[in-house]
Figure 1 (tube, helix red, strand yellow):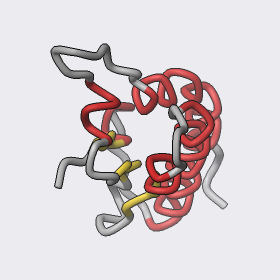
Figure 2 (spheres, helix red, strand yellow):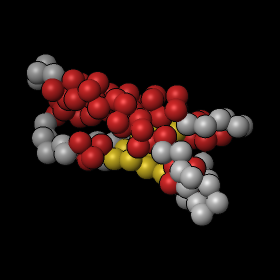
Figure 3 (cartoon, rainbow, N blue to C red):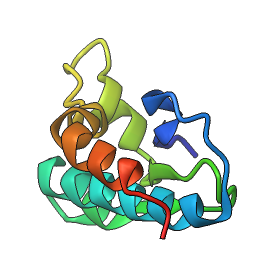
Figure 4 (tube, rainbow, N blue to C red):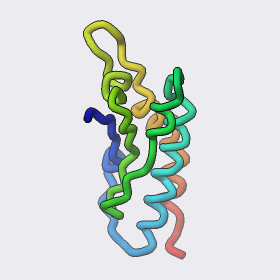
Length: 105
């Protein structure tokens, strides 16, 4: 199965603390929501496949695991990529940075 995935490591996160895990999850959900908004919709299967994989709580990843997700994100020789995941990261950068910069609760 092909899947498209973007890790929040793209933000250069180095900090590890208990409180930070919740903020990482919140940040990943912000990116996932934007990716769902941006992804092209035909049947809705791709949009519905976008979720946060939090199997590693210190590096949650936004994943689109429809079988063709990677082809839509990156493109093929016949079709340009739609880059909905990469654009979701770009569009939410300020929001994510705000969430991650919040003082420890």
